[in-house]
Image (cartoon, rainbow, N blue to C red; front, side, top):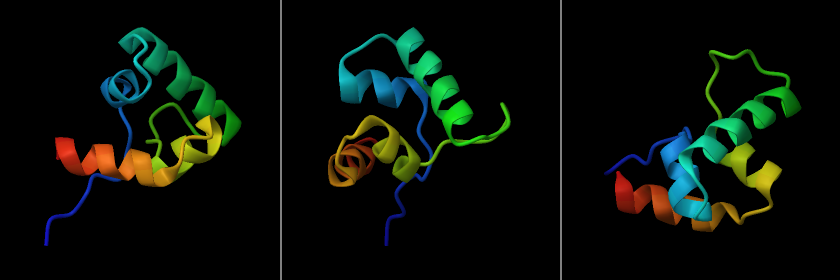
Length: 67
């Protein structure tokens, strides 16, 4: 059984949204603030889906392809 990654990186946001990697870093910072997380903590695919409004299935499908 292949396990899918649980966390989202700026490069993932770049590929999913079509925006720049810098936008991905900025968005992750905003998501950390929204969920009251520390700068060293990771953002999960579920948190990204909730914040962005993108269906979790689309995100998981992308993560399965790149993992």
